[in-house]
Amino acid sequence: MDNRSIGVFDSGLGGLTAVKEIMKLFPDESIVYFGDTSRVPYGTRSKEMILKYTHSDINFLLSRGVKMIVIACGTASSAALPEIKQEFSVPIYGVVDAAVYSAVRATRNKKIGIIGTTATIRSGAYTAYIKEYDESIETFERACPLFVPLVENGHFDTKVTELVIDEYLSEIRAAGVDTLILGCTHYPLLRNAIARYMGDEVRLISPGEEVADFLKKKINEENRHSHERDERQYSYFVSDSVESFTELGGVFLEKEIDGQVSRIDIEKY
Ligand code: DGL
Image (cartoon, rainbow, N blue to C red; front, side, top):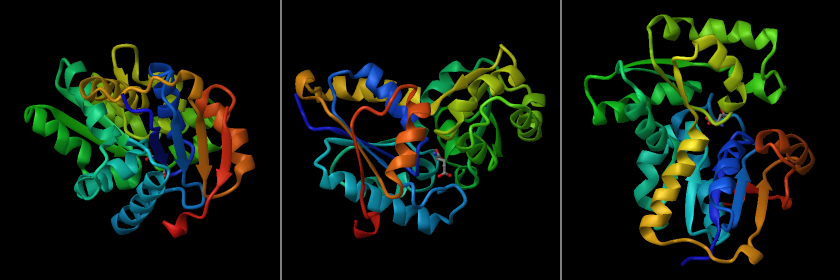
């Protein structure tokens, strides 16, 4: 038993799609969320900057005494996690391993599509993990830099979204993939539009759902459950406006933000 909180972070709001799934699977667990809203997006940054930001995000969560950390950001998980994992003593889980684990089990024709931010696709992390499981799986990757601004501006399923989806996904669809990894935690909000475009036979893998399932396995194996439902707390921290996080966060979480939202100076960590 371990009553400390689960720490989760993202460059901004996208990680709340993972928090939503973690809350569903772990109703007794306290969660500390950090959204680095003053430095978002990470997806267009160099690897050095993403490493620096990821370090400070982890240091901040450690200062809150968390028992484990979930990097609910496709970009930080793929560009930074493999290098920094060993530097910290708490377990740190990213969305890449979790999504790949499901994707390699889901594919029947061994053709997997991967979409993500520019930095995620540049890292090659998804394909590298997939090949570790099965060298014979073919991957088709595409950076989709306009997806994050579409989501942040509420274009979940509009004509503009349809046009951009066609621009980014036509080659992946033509390649005949039967599984598509939504390699960024913002993308589940485009799920309906992407699913319609790709067709019923293509399985979409959402990083938030997969990382929550993965966490369940880990928490069970290591007996790190919390048993303090009455004491359970959700706290949210951001590095920019509390108001806009509170307003928009509910859309990602699919319910109102229920917990204290505070602003911190992330440059200190
Ligand atoms: N949520 C981030 C991710 O999963 C995307 C936003 C960003 O570029 O920072 O990659």
